[in-house]
Length: 153
Image 1 (tube, rainbow, N blue to C red):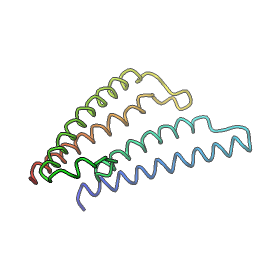
Image 2 (cartoon, rainbow, N blue to C red; image 1 turned 120 degrees about the vertical axis):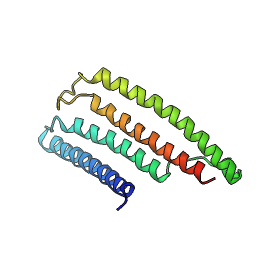
Image 3 (cartoon, rainbow, N blue to C red; image 1 turned 45 degrees about the vertical axis):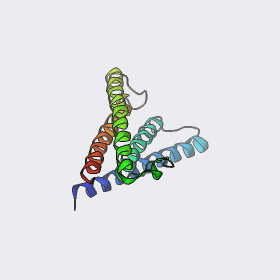
Image 4 (cartoon, rainbow, N blue to C red; image 1 turned 90 degrees about the vertical axis):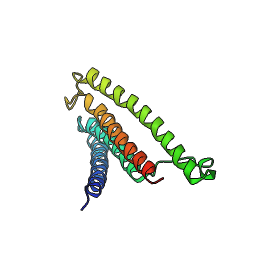
C-alpha cells in the first residue's frame, strides 16, 4: 500500500475518532447534567480539543483531495494553460497566508505553553498545535500540487 494512501486512511480514522470521542463526551455530559445535576469537569475541555483537531484534520483531508469550496465561474472560462497558471498563483498566495498562520500558531504556542486548562491541566498550546501542524502539512500539499501542475504542462 502506498504511503499516501496510508496517510489518507490514517487522517480519516483520526478525524472519525475525534468526532466520536467529542460526541460521546458531550452526550454523556448532557445526560449526567440533566439527570444527576453534575457533569464530568474535564469532558468539556477534551471535547473542545477533539473539535479543534477534527476541524484541522478535515482541512488536510480536503486539501489532499482538492475538495475545498472554490468559486470557478471565471477560471472555468479560461484555457487549460491559463487555469494552471491561476492555480499556481492561488497556491502561492495560499502558501503565503499559511506561512502567516504557521508563524502565528507558533507564537501562540510559545505564549500559552505555561497556561493550563483548569480541569485537565493540559497546556493551552495543544489547541494551537493543531493549527501549526495542519498548516505546515497544507503547505507541503500545495507545493506538491504546484510541482505536479508545472510538470504536467
